[in-house]
Length: 308
Image (cartoon, rainbow, N blue to C red; front, side, top):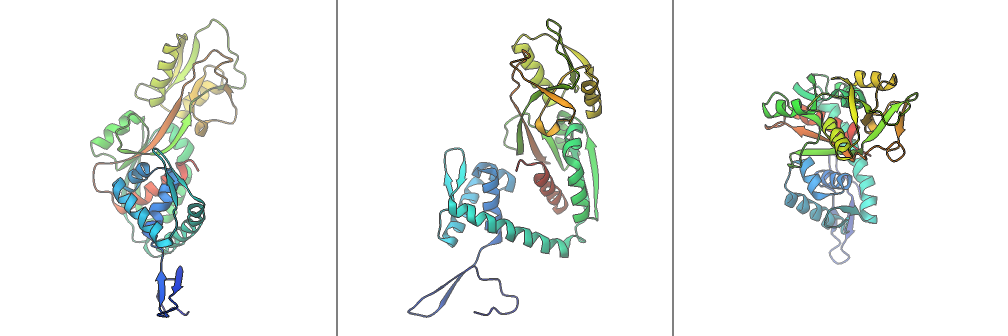
């Protein structure tokens, strides 16, 4: 069957043998985007946060897509949503189709996207994630002006609440449902290659200042385990922590994404250190309408920061 110029591609076509009328079924890109987001989040509730829609609306879109393809795409449990075999197959097509759609749209609209994006990020996250985000976003949206604030998470939360920032990448401080979780990493004790733990000596720490999400978690774990410590190096930037650890002056705690090549991981049991648990990185948007430029920047953050 030939398609007229400008007509959408046919995804499914059934022929009724009695009426000999073709029944055309087409995939809706907006439904595929919702499906892809659910698959990546493995949760309808998390997908609803990312898409800024209600969970009921997400469920309706998923049901509509399942009706279109005539297959069940997800097995939904109490907390998670797992892909069926048909869902895994469709996800491959969804990613290709959405990527091609984005490529085509970028070709025509990237010169039209303008404005200012006010973004906040802690120093260690900037060091780990920001370079590829800036590279790809500037190429994609060359007419957008970026204003970046480098600060600890606590101050970035305040800036968002005051309307001073459009979005921020922060360490999660509470489960209020307003942030979009991008990754959750185990905190690990780290030291320089030459560091040697001395028994019965207070643990020398390199820490960020008050207000850093990691700091409170680290000190609470040490206090709960009654492990003696001293703050040997306190700094506001990642360079200071790296200097303290590399020189052997102090140890620190960090996530896998922020590890440096020359650092060693200290086994908690072997070195009589408390287990620290995990740390969650989330994307927060300001309390106002989200401009298209901010949406594009948020997409780049999701692509670069989210666990694959």
